[in-house]
Image (tube, rainbow over all chains, first blue to last red):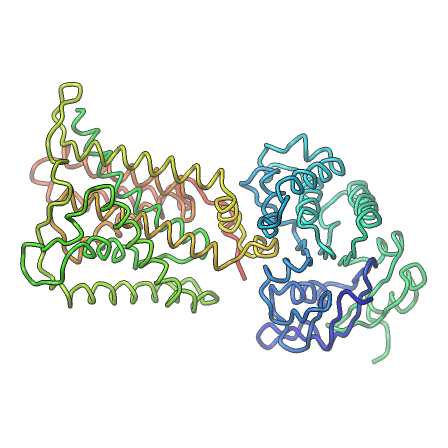
Length: 244
Length: 301
């Protein structure tokens, strides 16, 4: 079943069109990479789905609900968890406070406290370093630790889908490996759907899954990451060798 | 000497509470709320019957203190939330400059509403008269009111800190103040947080109104504006958006005013404010980001 369906999405900033008519359907439990060169519209597309910069045109359905034009908090409450580019940790809050920010949306449910404590323990098990630093200021964590924190923070909301914008940005390759290792482990454990934006397609070919290639605000390639991999079409998309 | 300390603290309390009210709202929506001063004035005038007499006809003022205080706080919070719902909500996506002008205009609307009902004449009022008796501490004779002002401010500050640190709503407010957009992506409801900030800020305005009204014994429709100016300066010196900075700078400004009143030569005293503002310029030259720079001055969408 399709968890996320985009139809003819367009995103504009003033006179600039960042995303032009993207249609896309993502199945429940899939891992989907959106790759493409700088300025291809990847982040804009994610932000439009999350409701941060609303799409100027088109419709978005998530889990059977039409979320077009909905507020970010309402979209988050349906189980769409967005991890934006640049790891927006709340630097002045402690690590544990960061993890707790997103748990309020279910505060009215019965057994919420016990469930939250359980979730917290699970996140700490996945990322032991966070437990170690739980009372420290989040702004003082290293880049890799911050990336783990924002993933943990997203997990605490019990999402259906996590959308991550450039998780490898500014991280050393071995740290990126660690981050991905845990992401993939979490995904199979929790039946999560992952939507990952990365500039390079290398990571996608390593991890596998579906890969979409964007360029000029459009999806130019869609296929299995391992097959599409480093084909001539990918090269062309990045370097623009194809004939117009 | 002790007299100076207490004078500084009680004047600083007013500025600190005022600055806090501005910083709270600035934190969550990058709005410098110039209407805050008029919310202060309104909260106190809500105790009076509309009249043009110099002597205020107090109606709610006859209430015992344990009803009077919540009443004024609620009036402040209520008006502040109303401002948000009726006016500021429509400017959510506007630029900070636009919002600031809107708040200016709104302040004047409130002030002229009061003018219509009460005229611009200052009115004498005696709130909680038992507080004007002097008390003796360490050999200094202080008005009981001054002591109560300081104690009340400390209670408010401690209460607010606990609220922000220990409650879920406080957590959401701190998160939203640092990165509003991210907080929303984690399901934090924007309207709720902003309304909460306005309610808190309005209640603070009510507290200031009560303290100021009982200290001076008169109320006039301009009273909020004068505190507002100092409070606004305190928020800037403290580091816009930083609550701790706002409080610290509020107390510093209070101390600066009182100390200059004492140490300046008699001839220069009428120009005290010029000296205080001069000091403000110096502070800003050396620390343009404020005494305690706020985190998360990141652009919001």
